[in-house]
Amino acid sequence: MADVKKKPAKVVTKPYLTGSVFDENSVKNIFKFFGMMVLFLLMAFIVSLMTGFGAKVLQIIFNSAVILLLLYICYTRGINHGTEAVTRGEILYQRQEKGVEMTPNEIRLSYHPAKGFVTALLGMLLILIPAIILAFTAEKQMTTPGALPSFATTMARRSEIGDALQATYIESKPPTAGEYLRVFVRACLMPVFRMLDTENKSLVLTVERLSPLMLLFPVAAYGIGYMRGPKERARVHTRIEENRRIRKRKEEKAKKARMGTGSSKQPDQLN
Image 1 (cartoon, rainbow, N blue to C red):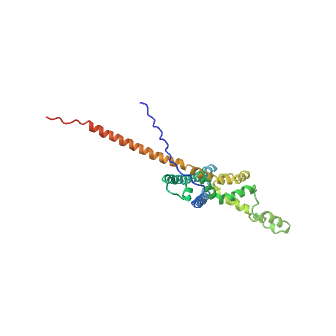
Image 2 (cartoon, one colour):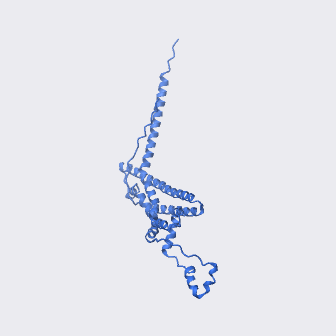
Image 3 (cartoon, helix red, strand yellow):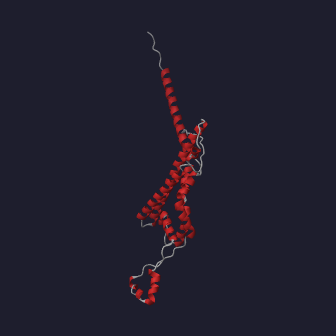
């Protein structure tokens, strides 16, 4: 007998009210996203420094896993936020159908497709702005002279060559604002820079100029996850409806079984 393929469950959706991009919880959610990013980037920075594997392949694998973990966390957080917003919109729609009065603030809390992207972008802004500045001001880093060799210390005391040695080896320029920005951005993208060949100055420069786009990946992951809110709610409704149908079928089978058992009994014959 050929196997009977189970029909896919019909997707069940419920109407919901659409909110706005900003609501009374936007500031709180923005700071929550910012705090999450600061905490994770700090942990990624420390872990990347502690796990300095000798093989470059292992460094690439490990740091890629760290990056994917960050994107997955942002994606799931976005899904949770979007699902909650859709749930609130469904409740408000039911209240609207019943004629219950609602405030504008309540409606704004409902789901809006762009809310996830805007929340994450504003939460990333304090990290994104330095990267944007660096992208427009970054220059190829050249190798600078090292410290004065020990055998040349006596030469530095001679007036005819001492000034030249001082300028070449000892005197150094104070760090500029651009260098502070570079350190900050590299710290935020430490897993990425750990995978690079630091001797390739052109590649490092390219990554620095693309750093704003790389920092937008968590924003995109959160926003895409938020947009899955309606589908996640539909999946919940579909599962609930499928469970209800299964329970109903079981009850009908049990009822038929009881009726069949009762009809099979024969009345006792009188002597």
